[in-house]
Image (cartoon, rainbow, N blue to C red; front, side, top):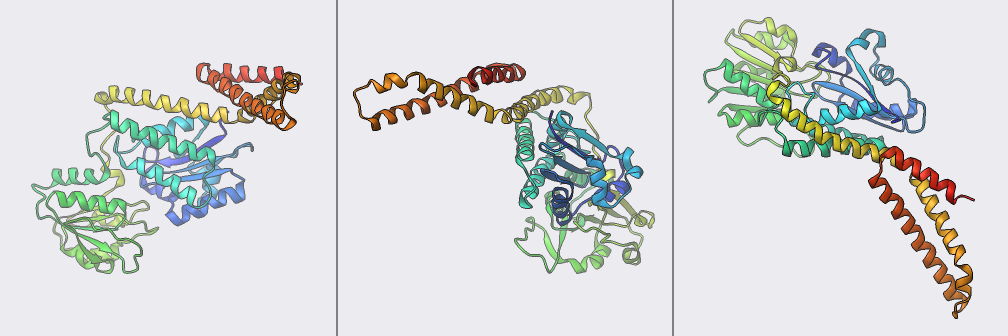
Length: 410
């Protein structure tokens, strides 16, 4: 039985008000992963933290598994009984299937969106960076990303370009007669902010993007955008028609008390793409203001037109599922295969010992011959066993290996 599990909360079970209780910043996620290993004894740990979901993944190795939901609640300092119905746990094969479908966008609010592949890969990168990605989670997440990329290149799960950023544009088209010249302010220079700014520029919008003065490292401003200091965001809101906020802040960056005095009643659209939310929900009641959070931007789930595509995608995922299962269950038998190969080689060498001694060669050459025979025997027996693995069902192959163990052991 696979001894890894996950616990999480997502858009399908909880609104943003509850999801933000379980959200992690990048720094907090790294600290939490280290804590899971140090305090709870996990072999490996990873956290997927997006605007629509938080998932804690744990591999227990050979240790008894503990409740991942209880651990998640401990990390966030919340009472488990208060939110159990909003969260979900999966173990082993069920967790494997979930991650494969998740990476393909099958479980995203915007069905089939592409960003989740990067997010799953980033979760593995972060786990690696803090020393928390063990061999099982490493293989599991890499399998999910590889499978998702293959699905994306062979199956069309959703209209091209379906993503949260493009959903903002779709909604703007529904609400505005034209987008050319629309004054837009994008707050946040992360991946989501840059993506949204880029698609707004493509629509002919006049886009400004905030930058913090203490921002370190490479700063990327999408072509066509103008950068303004983050500290000027409040004054710029008064001039903007559209405000998009997508920061990684753990608290509100646009408070009602700061924004309301700058409103003049003219129509303004606010899009809050952050979790936890950047914008105070009180603004939704202000004159002229329309506020949309991440839950308001859902593009729906799969419909009947997607059934065939989903069947094809699941067929591909099934291949990767079996590949991972073979690796997972086979790895525990590798020491046994090596032992069988070594014991068989020793017996073969022993059977030809007298023949080698009768050869008209010196002792050094006899020893070299014995070593060559033993080495070749190890390789041949191992090759035969691996060949059986490729042609037998997993259970039959395991049974075969264990039978051979009995045959070669003294």
